[in-house]
Length: 346
Image (spheres, one colour):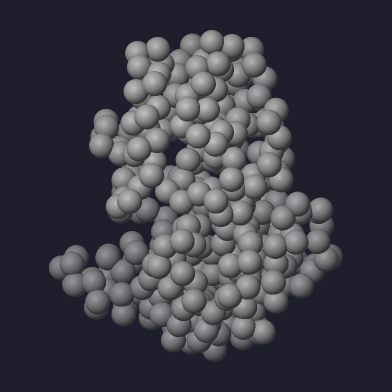
């Protein structure tokens, strides 16, 4: 029997948030690896760099020392696959040193930011020089621009895990909020206008739980989890729309917890979820009408939310997503009919 691959996850494990944040994909993949009986180790890039920085703020020195510690970690742990997420401090030179410390290991860049931003594209382009594979939470022709003839570039969905998505709001009837959204505002952010128009149309008929975006303070960590647990419906809206299969990880937090999720209809998510599993809209006016409808038709709300929750966990369970990543990178036969596997380019 082939042994389970040894996995090193290099990412942001939010140690310095002191328990005030646990929503990232890195932690879900750690949980998945443990459930799959894979030997796994985590390396929190930003935290290690900050802890090693003299006086706590000389980040350049801390980053240099962190890169040395990463090479040492690879040599000591001897992983088969190294996943590197949004790690701006980890240099390509360090990845090459890691290859020398662990010959034969595969290095994989994971990126869950929207590919419309320059920073995201620069991050991905930089890793084409050093990584064997790159996976992003956007699909489509854009992925081909990062193929080199030596690497793999593909899509991966935002993973869910039962230790993180612990609620089932489809089974509840008593809520503090009818409609939930939390997000950090950005320049030229169309979500602000959408929320303004939505609030103007629905007025006092809907109990809004809107955090960030110039409204109530943003909630994070346990406060964020409790706000979702207290919400009947939620907005899975993105800073940038009209990108195939792109969604921020809030879609996981909503659908995975049985919150009825409203999604823009231009991202091709219909390939995964029917209108009986989530609610699609095209205009703010259509969204307002549908929010009003499901707010007053609770049996329909519960039915769709329950179906969406079940479908999300079935398709995008972190173990299933991680298995797909490992099998693709290691060249193993696929153990499941991954619905997104056609979005892989070499």
